[in-house]
Image (tube, rainbow, N blue to C red; front, side):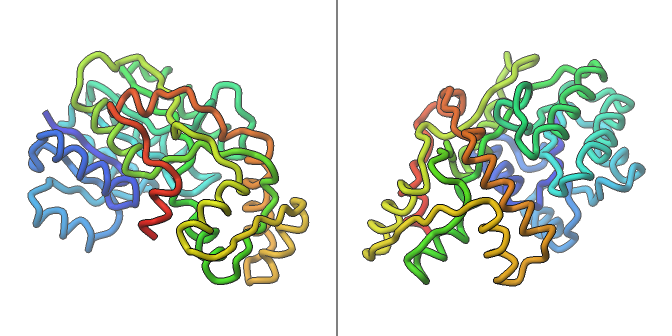
Length: 283
């Protein structure tokens, strides 16, 4: 059995490879697919089969999926380009006779109007239309997305954004990666859609309190309007488009789009998800 992992050289993908090995999958049965030649060379030294492929290179994508039994498609990292990139993988998998696709989608995507939702929803539709048996892992937020907030807490004692009282049920990437490994190595997950998130949803006031305990200094949370956050981000060097985009993500959080805690992630991995404060202590 060959498990082909797209995005294997990325932050989530590296955890997926570790989780597969920890579940007894031989490195030679995993095809690590990514763009970084240096990282792929390192993985090859560890015994993994590797394939260099850019999502925008259909020929390379097709070569990468040949002979694979399962394709784990970790969603691409460039909003606005994802649907075409994911479509290339799905088409290649169908043509190659791949037995199953595992796709990392977005928490609550069927009814969500989160900034990232449309591309994920459309990708799920492409997978359904392909006829390939699939497992959808609708990932919530990664705790690591807030490294910059923790850095602000350490440096200035203040976290400021437009998330307001919105709550985030985050978990570290390693927890989500373990879920991919479970689904890839167990029977019975075909046709399932899992809503994955951390066990506890926290607000930024909670984040500030946790940071205070970890750092041993007072940290406060200062809510901003969406416009104020965008202006603040431009003031520290972000271009106007990126600043507006990040502020929109905070506004999505304020509306509770990342707060659901259905418990699917902890059930899949067989343990509680790692709490926010425990992750902060590793930073």
